Image 1 (cartoon, rainbow, N blue to C red):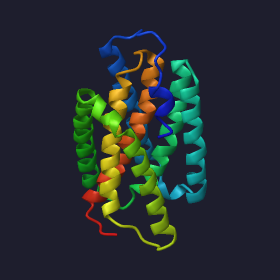
Image 2: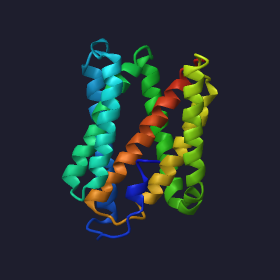
Image 3: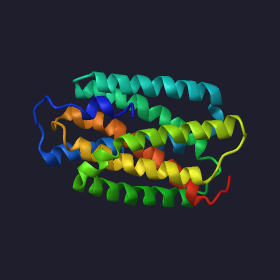
Image 4: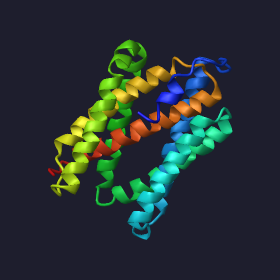
Length: 218
């Protein structure tokens, strides 16, 4: 997965943070990202966002943010790159969440938090297992993306069970990325760079769980 390889292969560097400080910084940074998303969804009118400029801007900003974060050794610059990922995701969520019951969204957030906590625990408890399925996760996600594109562009439809498949894949990625985040030098820059991958894992899991919990049958 593009967002993880360059970060989690790092082995050179000093542990300038304790384990609690390192994981605390990851947690605070994740909270920051989700808080920014909430503010965008709560305050920006969705109908004021043009679709194609949103999609194009999302990809440009997100990929630029990933490149900036992972290409810098300065945690402040990495945090700036992280925000370039977070902000366009917030606008995409703003449009995508329209039509969903607010109570359902809250329930999906709660389930996502619980599942994320479980997968993080498993990721740190069984890191070898998750590393052993890294290739499977990558190819499974790639196959799922291609299959969904074909279904939408060629057959003009989507299938509900694909949400289950992709949700399971991102459960695996949360366990994998959390376990790998604990295996690299514990410093501020690595914490921020790890957050970029974990944030995207969790957001993708939330979107799929929301779709599943909505009960829609595509």
